[in-house]
Length: 123
Image 1 (cartoon, rainbow, N blue to C red):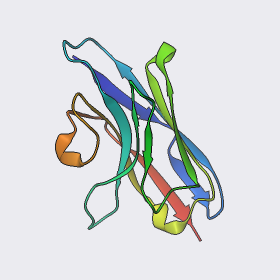
Image 2: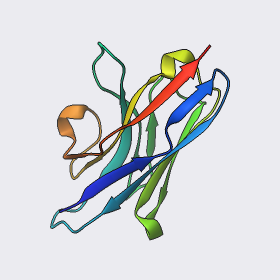
Image 3: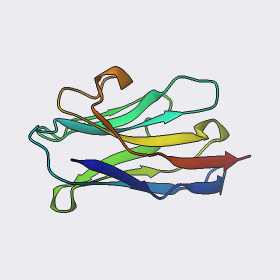
Image 4: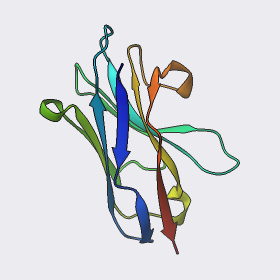
């Protein structure tokens, strides 16, 4: 069974930076096609923030984080990271690592979720 474990959340002031990491562990008979980060703020739907194709390295960023967040993959450690800079109060949410053997376009296509890590940005 594959599990995703996030780390790196915390509290920062606006303009600050945080780095989230997600390590995949375990064995599966399915091939993971993409990994990504979603976030969910209270009272809002879970939304895709960034994702990366494990085959093509193609990345996606939502309009709200483009230019501020960078997703990267470290195959040797089965890890995906999200470098977040110039954080804004509206980035405050629970951030979830996600993996899929199909695509990472929406929460509906995700096969595996991490437990989540909280990011809080104060003004």
